[in-house]
Image (cartoon, rainbow, N blue to C red):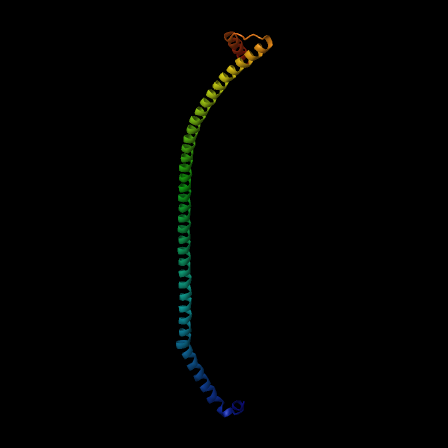
Length: 164
């Protein structure tokens, strides 16, 4: 460094160094540092505002989620109520149909039983007539005489009563 070797110019160089340092210090102190500080404060304020906005948005999202969940719970409860009501109505309708069909089947069964009783009575009458005829033919063949119809009818009636 050639400046340090020349002692005669050493004092003016130190003087201008001090003046330049003071000038730069004042410029930094009054202009640059406050501008940097203001920028940092503005940045910090923006970050805090953004954090506040994010917290507010989170709170709103949680409220919206809670409202959504409540609405879903209400919708599920309403749907369950509708399903239960539909099931009850279908059950009542099925019971009514079942009662109607049971009544119709009862009438049909009663009519069928009456027909069966009539057919059995008719068959028994024919069986009685056939039994009287067969017994008469058997006696005539065995004895050679025609039996009395009244006596033969009473004997067949007694035999049928004893079996039935």
